[in-house]
Image (cartoon, rainbow, N blue to C red; front, side, top):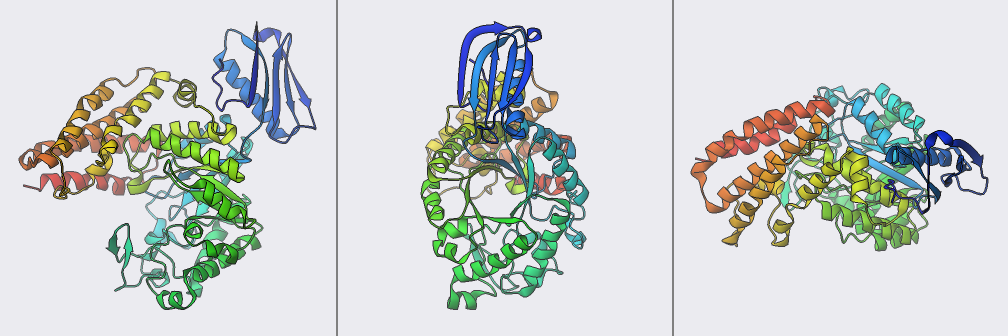
Length: 557
């Protein structure tokens, strides 16, 4: 069995074996194949690569390179015929929640994406791009500069990957809107409130769609990207506009309805993108909640259908958009954010469902999202494993995952893959009884104990501690020292979180101070490891999110 990632559509082994030195490589242009389709044959004296376009030849070579790596002592006789399930196969990396990757990390990731036959990388921006005229917003954030974006675009293109950007142009603009220079552009002005995530908020998040300066602001922002990036796709974001209709547009919303307000504003953004010769995209949560808006929006708009659970209704969403004639992609998630190890069961079920429903529903693209909520404090390992798994679903459809193959490609170590798999399932017992996961519980204030707490709740967290300590001890030796340290740090935070959860539920407040002291070395290691893959700009803010927990515990008594 050949552990190729992603697995080919058709693979037949002849049972023979050949010394590489006896085989010559021949390239055969086959016009009957589609642009990304290819054939690969290894037989007596020759290796044949069949293709019709550069992309097909590139993928044939990538598959051959994997086979050579997997079979250094002799290449197996085989015939492969392969083509992708989805035309567009991408990964979206969040670079606006504190963590902005180094150029070295960006380029390493691009090379991995190419090896796994992705053809698109999208970078998500809110305020971490060094757009001219907005210096007061991004100074100190170690932003991606226009010259760096251009460099990454050129680098990605050499590997057959389109680099595109997602600049949120409606919601998620708090960092801009709390600044005095931009405060007048906010939907929520001082004295106004709205409900967000189950609680009232007065923090502005969304641009006021009726303010003509909002569109002017976005046009300037987009133009700064157009100069640096030539991608035909521009993701305008427009998701989670939670405060829309609760502020300055409240009266207009009452007269025209939210859909009309949303469509009018987003239509203007689409015009700005179209005038630049690009194609607009938006996250589709608002259209899925308000499907009447679809008929009001441009027909060339691409809808990105995102959802991160095992039961995300991708199929019905696809049907909703398909009837409109618009193009649409399915967008599952890595489920690594707001966690210590990621959630293996959730992400695999979510990614598989996106592949199944997307193919059945006519989606043309598969975009795996990797977010960084809460200061982007998760380590890279779970995200990388998810990206390797996503490559299988994006290229091959809803196939069975070969865990050893994925581990070998992602980490160069089967043991590392097994470690992350165990870690990613370690909190399953908590979810089964409705208890918060370790990362979530760590961020619930000490005094907020559920009224219906069971006596067994503390025991559920206590039972995790030996398993977490084993993970801490059993970090594999055949991976880089950086990966080893990231594994140990994640396990260390998890042990800390489980012990705090036990103390919380047993009311042992007097023991908090001694436990809080143990967080300091974890935070120092977090800071050291952050700088190995990421820029310094967001480190202080992200570290402060850990310190808030330690400070609360230290001051509780």
